[in-house]
Image (cartoon, rainbow, N blue to C red; front, side, top):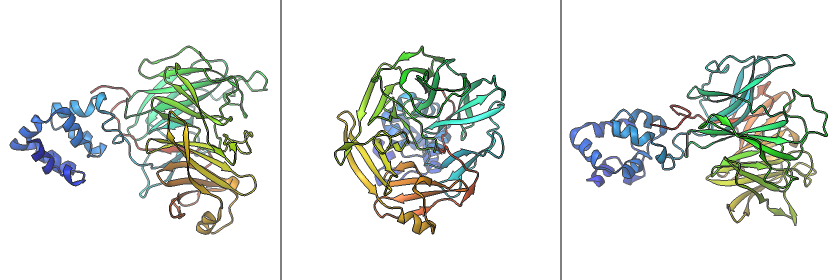
Length: 424
């Protein structure tokens, strides 16, 4: 009997069943009885072929379907149906306070509220980080010299948000967001605490220019609603993390671990409880280890980390001399084995497509998806989003030139969640 239902739903034909047909199939008496005979595992296998938007509607079929679709244990079997494809990159429109724009990667472009009016009122809303469809923002309560802030984590698509205070850590911190909808609807915020005793930093400047040694970590869990006590640095004493002010990714949340690009030739990794710390050595090229910057361990942040098809990718950009970018894939996560996937050694494909000379300093790698890379070109006047196909070398302009689009650029992936907490 289950096979009959599978055949009716086109599961055996590598086609996604249409939601309307699926709902109609289970609404008639015969098919409804067959559906009730299916185990939860087989039902999840069938529903995994349905886009997430349609899953929300299919919750109305029966109480059992709602329970099966919403149960946290089934998230891994429906890993990416919460997320849509990359829609574009968010940036702050500095002409208007608390207004944001998007450089679209899809046509038609996604519709978002540019003022984020669904959020609580903020005197100044600052984009900080993004992860799998959620945004991390700072909501400043005052604009004077004694200003304070709360963190806000939100989904602009679902218009859901959580507000919570900062950790009140007196030292300089760099916040990163960790979230995986395939595992849980809860998120974590990591405050990497750094030692700035030898730098002249203003007390209100949370992120001074430059880098310094990591001395500790604080972690906020949306499940508990509290910050952890400061956890001592579990990496070496000389690990330094730097976020790319141009918007390039410096972190990936994967396997329940936060992965950060260090200035040293390693990826620094820590779990959501601050108990497991490790470093993954980067690949070697021409006998020398890759670093988060070129020339080796220079101050300029040139390393980029991304997750594509459940594999970590590291891109090393060398803009000194002849421009070159090399993309490496971590084939063996625990063994630390990197494989060179692709190398681009000239700006000519981009110049031919954009019909003008390009300055390598204006080029920022912002996303990797399979065999495609996305670059943002910003010359302090206009920005243009482009894609580069590794196999063919084809370059495409994905957006029209836009003004006032200064970095950072945060990836925007539409996320459809009923709440930012687990439960049916």
